[in-house]
Image (tube, rainbow, N blue to C red):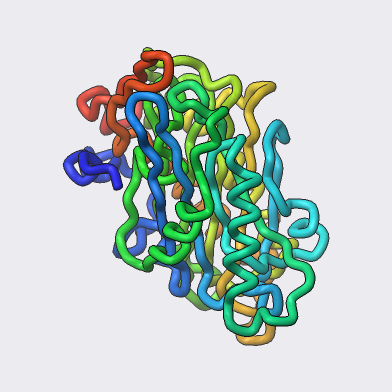
Amino acid sequence: MNPDASLRPRARDLGVVVGPTPTGPLNALTDVPGVRVGHATVRTRPDVHSGVTAVVPDGVLPGAPVPAGVFVGNGYGKLIGSTQLAELGELETPVLLTSTLSAFRVADALVGWVLEQPGCDGVLSLNPVVGECNDGYLSDIRSRPVREEHVRAALCGASAGPLAEGCVGAGTGTVALGFKAGIGTSSRTPEAADGRFTVGVLVQANFGGTLRVLGRTLDGPGPASETGSCMIVVATDAPLDARQLTRVARRAVFALARTGAAYSHGSGDYAVAFTTTRPGTARPLADADLSPLFEAVLDAVEEAVLNSLLAATTTTGHAGRTVPALSAGRLPTDRP
């Protein structure tokens, strides 16, 4: 956990409201029914600031996948499991986020955890989905500090309640837009067709560019994250198929441009989107009804990035490098 995060305001607390669509009660990914999130933070000062974050759809297993889509904005990254996810349009494990060089250990630990779940005794193949960001500016990334016990702690500790943001889990050592960043989340409840649905997002922010808030730019004193990335996970309860979820994921990556993302050569910009509504349980939405969901995703990702910055705290890490947090007093509350 980040003990200081609860003392720092979120974007809405400061009057920064993105878009007209209402949020869910927590303004978090966990507003989507059936989605839990857990963090395990790995910190040994001054050199290690890392961790793992788990997004866990209830009941998801190799024999009980949920529809999903993936979109790659810039593919300089390691999104383990992405090709099968794109090919079949199914997510059959939780989605885990971590540090670049720890991604492979995390994937192996996720496989071990899934094989132990009830109903998986006969599983001979499964597709772990693990994304990563490079936290090597503030953390000793070569030590590969994230291990099996941290993965299991994040998975077993996942809950449907309020989410810790900022310097926790996979966001412990990340830097974005010139400031200390981390995990951020937000949600929206758009109306589409004849129903109201929930869309929630979680970002692991670690990308370069110049921060833009309500149309104004803010220069950050930290380094450009040329070897960074941004991992975005989108969940919804709207009845969508894999093709439509890929369209949703595409908008999530597009939304980073609103925050000032540079989409640099060394940035891996990815989004995974899934629905908790399984095929055959509800009438699918028509493509013509998707625009409110697209807008909801754009707004929620923009706000989640801001929350990731506002919740983070100034961090001194590996090699004595320091990245300051974004001061809440610097944020505008109205558009120019």
